[in-house]
Image (tube, rainbow, N blue to C red; front, top):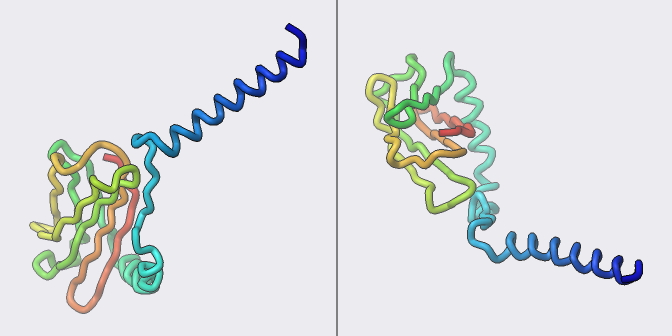
Length: 146
């Protein structure tokens, strides 16, 4: 075997190596890449409203707190907010699998709400809590590992 044959074999084996990664990233279901939002153009129009809600949440004396427990994720709302008047939703987004996403209504008991562990798969989640207390609207967003 001479050196030009060795170079051709090396180039072909490198190309096969790279093409196998391209095939895996495109065709294998395990490596599916999904958009965070299907309607991202429509969502962009509401972005200023989100900024206003985030700013309202920053004016609170204490922020919303997420705590991992053996039962699930415990969400603690600030104590200066009346739990009976809180209305809104808690969204859990899993960036790796859209099928695991879910939304819960807020039902605060004693400034806390528990999201059961049987609804949540271990891993990274985007938690988005949108709530209204009186006339003020608030938004809390955080990446969370369960």
